[in-house]
Image (cartoon, rainbow, N blue to C red; front, side, top):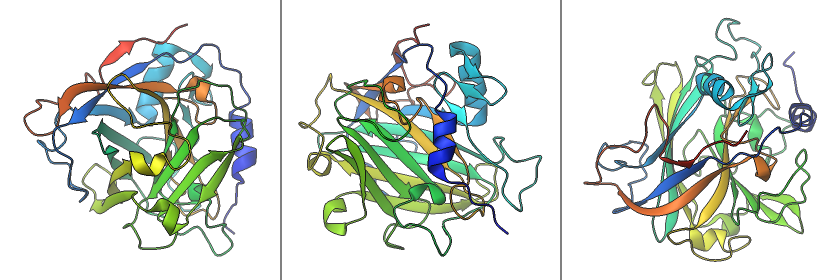
Length: 312
């Protein structure tokens, strides 16, 4: 029998520890000279100069060594946490390691939208939530979720309940867009709480390309998501205006990895504990060019250019 783990209980447990310091990491977000083609292929020129970050167990270990641990045994750093679980048919030696799931993410913006591309290493592909799954439960499918505080309020949230001001969650699954009715899920803040939607009319404008990459990044079921989130779509709810140079967003990433489990099956939280905007890293919009002729990708050891460091 496949095990079912309920997200609320798991996240409440994981988020129970109290943050010891505010996350003050600020990453510069370069501006595209030309928007990318959303085909799931990261062209060297196309994404040159983009903000590059890693979401992996190795990164969590580096985070803990540099920024401190909330719980070393559970691999919970001050800005990231390993919540992967062993799937029913998963090798114990691979579970909860980089061989289980990991990702590299590149980011940039222009006057029309926010863009990202992620190359995901995965040992098992699973976008089937099971027959009894709630469609809006994006955490039951291989996917990437961007948590973004569109006004960078840095407010304290607790275990998915808020109250929130401008938290948005945009989830693109590891399958072609429109391959199912659940390929995109958007959670907006309405009256202080998270409200999910898969309404095509509300989602119109969100776009992503998908490519199944087999073993390209070292796994067995690797994939790429290349996404676009237009400002005009985000302005339908919580984005107060089109971003400009100097705009700041709080952000965190979640890489979902169910590995054959019905229901919640594990994840990695990166660059901030997702349900507490006060724990988020910050992306600072700059005019530094990204794209063709922009030069090499921003980063040393997979880090974007950092304006300030974590405050202990």
